[in-house]
Length: 227
Image (cartoon, rainbow, N blue to C red; front, side):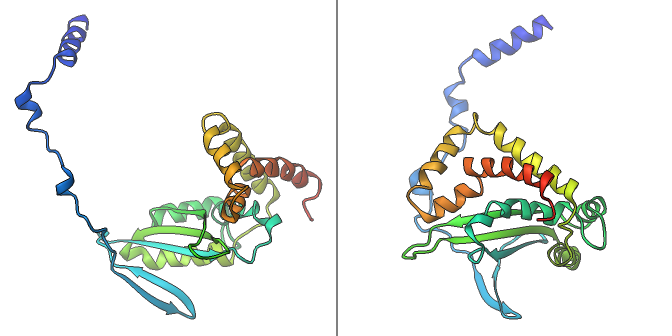
């Protein structure tokens, strides 16, 4: 073992020969395209809902994003958006419990997850705010993907207190663990909340305000669940 260690140290500390370094592929600015790549996108409407199809080579995998507009959600309810996205996928439906739903998602898809998107709009006064439910599946499983999305959006169970409480506890622990290693992000979000509407909304759904909300919500779950 000692001999192997010494050999490894010798190899690591020996400078590479110039002729070996010359074999490493490299790029210069002249090799980079000066124009950005534009994706071939088709706009359409499905039952009155705006749709966009991005024609990309995905090796037979369908990527589907459902974007739910949050502009009608009152500010005091915005911290619940993150929990709502998780609850859709982690609390089951009226047809199956959360264990069976998770197994069904794992069997027929490459995964589902929900995330919030908040962004300022150029030359606009209101920010763009969306809850995006994202899924992917093989093309042959696209009908199963659509069926699962339909179930979680239209038949979701949101009345299971203990299951919801567990989700809130996980969110609270995650936010508390991020305070020190991601302190710079939290401070930046707090500062942004003072200057832009998008920053204020994003901070409410992912900053220190969100952590304080989770702590209060845990007490409300225990003492006032029906309300």
